[in-house]
Image (cartoon, rainbow, N blue to C red; front, side):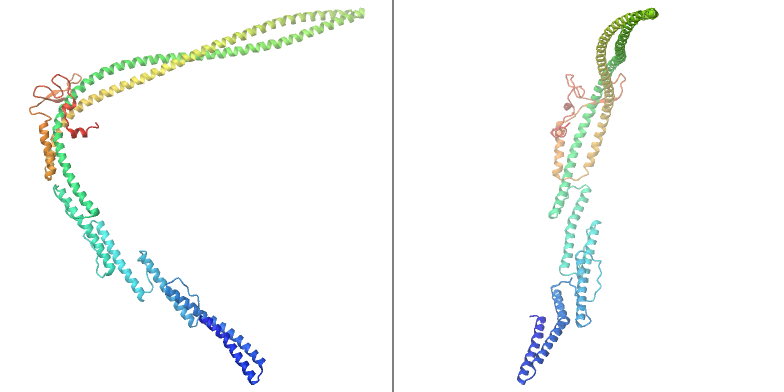
Length: 566
């Protein structure tokens, strides 16, 4: 039962007990029981009011302080003490708020240190917790500065660096010692590798990394040793290749001169081909010009046919209009004939009426007779005109039919002219393509002739370059001899040299003589031909046939593997 519950229970029980005692006393001593009961009720009411007032001013602050103390005991720092007063409970609440504020400040400081922010300041520095946090910050700052110092030295290539562990203890000293040990693990193999590479750069390829290292440092050791070993092997193979190059250079010189002679002969043949192609090109161009002229003439003819066709169509339209006019005129003549017939009837009636009139109608009868004669003449003229118009209509029909046939003939002529023009255009296009193709062939032959001439000159230069290459190979051999190789690495090229001596690309006793390279009759250029002991030139067999390339420059299996793609 809480203090509050106990106090409430006491506030109710005590007044009731007093009232009961007063009731018993009044009964025993004969007092006024009703007055005592009313007094007791008032007393109970006052007790209840005073009890609740006491609970609000004493018990509630005690509960708040107790709850705050429990949260403080559990380490909850985000609690806010809401009670405020000027009495002793208010002072206790103010003290608790100060404690929570101080704890939150230190919590924020510790979280900043945990997140790596060492630039935060702490207001309180006098209590033991603040002093401990500042000490932790100082140790972490020293470790961070030491690590940055090591990283800076390593970044500048200085591996002789350490963290000063003075004043450190426990896990911090273990961290500093671990970092120093890590630097040593990095430093030792790097220094040995640097030493080995320095000695190897001076030409001593017998040195190796001897330390026992693991992981990536073991891989570094193996890679450096492998690099030095392979460098020695490469140098030995280069020495071998230099011997082969020196031997092949002499053969290339001889082969280049033979190639120059053959190239010059090929150039002469290309000039003849170029002349023939030029003549063919001229003929094709002439045919193309004639075809173009025929195309122009057929175009004009087709245009004239189209114009004639259009004129005939206009004539056909005119004939149709004439026929239509004749029909309309025939209708007019029929109308005139009908008018003449009616006039004749009227004249006849007028004559009859004049006869009835006797002497008075005689003059009118004469006029009626004349009108009748005119009507008859008009009818006869209309009849003749109708016959002529009918004949004109028939002639117009014949004209339209003739024009239609003429249009059909012009259509066939236009169609034939179009086909002929299309054929001529195809011939012209083919002639143009032939001319362009022959022009390209002519250009290609000219370029090929130029390239052939350049090849001849290049062959002579190749012979000279081969001699220079032989000299450079000898110089390279002298440079290779400056390297110190292990016996195993030196054995391979030495063995190859012996094999090369036995194979012999150029036999001993061969002589080289200067000769002129065949050109266009001017003996342009000079070169060398190697002559064997039996008097044959290099590049020729005894039977006079041209030798194969492999007969001039023999290749071993390794060379064939290297040049298989060529």
